[in-house]
Amino acid sequence: MTNLLCRRVCGYVRRSWQLSSFFSEKQVCACSTRAATGFDQHDSYTDVLESKEDFKYVERLLPQLQVPSPPKHSEYPTPSGWMPPKDKSTKLPYFVKRTRLHNWPVYTLIKNGGTRQLTVVRKIEGDIWALEKDLRQHLESIVGHTIASHVNEVGMFIHYKGIYENEVKEWLKEKGL
Image (cartoon, rainbow, N blue to C red):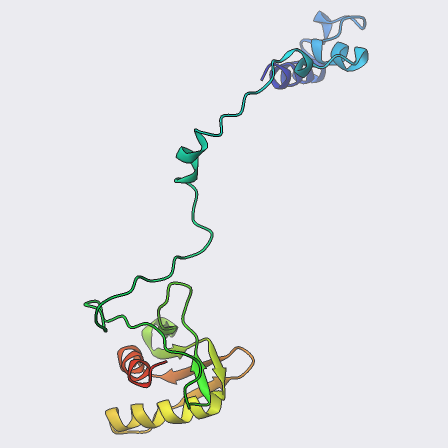
């Protein structure tokens, strides 16, 4: 703190034309004498003592590096409607990977001031076109008309025109994805 203050004050005084008459050329601040002599103020400090037993109080404040696995329940779905993912070894050619918090990656996207409403299914692995076809047929049977969709193979997501987030999540739950 003293070094910083000294540097600020000395730099200001050197640059200031009003106060330049107070300093002669031979007068220098503590910063420049320390730099010239090679003396470092840190040499005079005492050693630091590490307390490993007190670190447990710090550890509980740090964020966890990974999300813990969900607890086992006696029956599924839980009261919140959550179900654990099943194995990838199902007979379906596609799989929807869960998010890091073990939820389905199905979202509602509203654009253009609310005039364009989309349902997005992300993290699709396997045959994305088969998933798009099966899910579109299911949604069309619910609403009774055709639904526009957009498949992005590289991004591994599908957009469906309209808000069908709950219907898609129910369908994924039924399929065991």
